[in-house]
Image (cartoon, rainbow, N blue to C red; front, side, top):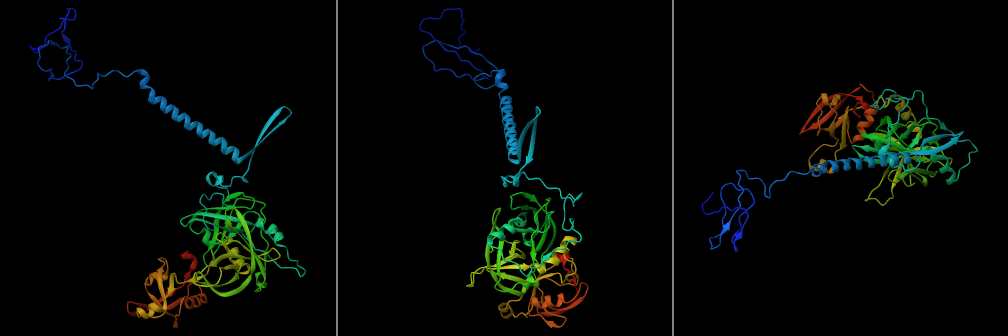
Length: 461
């Protein structure tokens, strides 16, 4: 102990006026001392070679050690109670509870109810079991087939009476469904038409193509998950299947008897789960419209077709579906109003029947390319020949194997000068799968001859 620190005996009485300082703590080596004075200072020193925290460490009490355990227990208890409450709410929303007492026995019956809270089922809906699927866990186009199905086109009797708008809506609304899909194209809404009592539905191809989830909502708000039976990009048609029975199929009429000026009505799904009806006339019967690379006939109407009406029904005054609405033209550069179109039932009938059997349309010849016409200004400015510019060549096509490339310009086919895409379509549609065509191609200032075999268009979908 240093000489200038006096040891104090606790039992000895200190001098009057002396000051007593206690330095409690732990010190390693250095000791800070007060400045020298005439007073007598005494210190009680507790020394240690360790340097624990100050103030001196005390052992945690038992209650302090179990506090984290209590907090964790309370957290898990709270989560468990929340899950129980959600489960009870889910049961009461999904099922109608019926309690009966008979002969002293209490019977509790739960009946599934999908009529209310349709959005609730978007989160808690289960995948329906389609009878025809059986062991197909991941249904693909064509995996659900309906053999020997035929769309029945009803002819109008001579004394057929026109119905009122109210009568038409009441007759047709239960045969129309709202269609919703989600996938790579985002969330899409549209409309569908019931084909059969056991759940086959007709809609547009562009609503369900490359979509991973498809739902159909009936007019009574019941929801079903749908599987894709077949699709055809050329006519923009697709067939779906839901696990339902005793549905009301639409009555289809003969679109071949339609004339310009005939009154028509359209039913579609412009607002979620709301089937809306609009009226108009047949404005024109266009038989030279190119739809997805093929010429077809479309019915033009001035009945309003809002977003969500695609795949809906164009109906005559007798309540028969005579067309499937599929598109409208909106232009900021034209003075015309929105122009709506529908595919006639007469054209849709054989397509639907083949989709139900095969899942796709067989036998359409194709070069296996995507193309667009060379604009006139580009032809003049860049000194290019008129023809068709190749945008894409399918890798599994004969055109790719023979060396046709993106950026080529097809100038002629079988010696016929190509004025546009219609020239190529007219030539290939007059041939069959396996036939060969001779193409004259312009590439980087030079012309080449390429012979290509036509292939089935379904191979490139």
